[in-house]
Length: 150
Image (cartoon, rainbow, N blue to C red; front, side, top):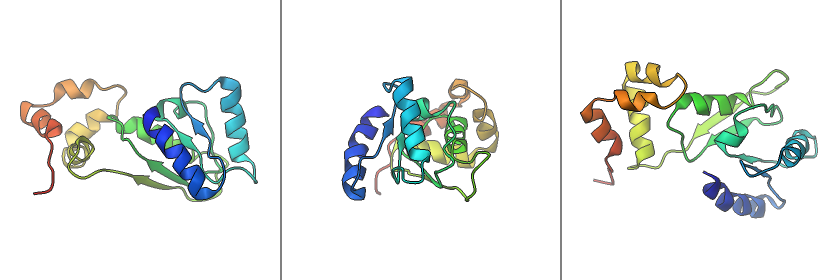
């Protein structure tokens, strides 16, 4: 997940014309706190990139009004928690959430299972990835299959 952020950061910085901060597990607490403070400021950066794990705890990013999930996570509760970092007490705007899914990939299979299996989705909402061990063989096969353009 950090590897994708390492690619995305210089691209977004070039597109937006200024340095975009990237918060990931290798960032020190002091640097993390400074990134958040800068982002929350009225004249702060227009965007901020966070890895799910590094951005998943102890953050209030009420300056954010758009959340884009890329490089999807197995557990939707983790993504929901990341979204909640923007939609907090003090947020004065609606928060729009986008989930990027590449067609024909594992991400799409995961999303199909989450959308189509209500019982499974209910089990996934809990912590951890133990739900994976509860899949039926055909569900596991579907999850792991590659479906390119037909």
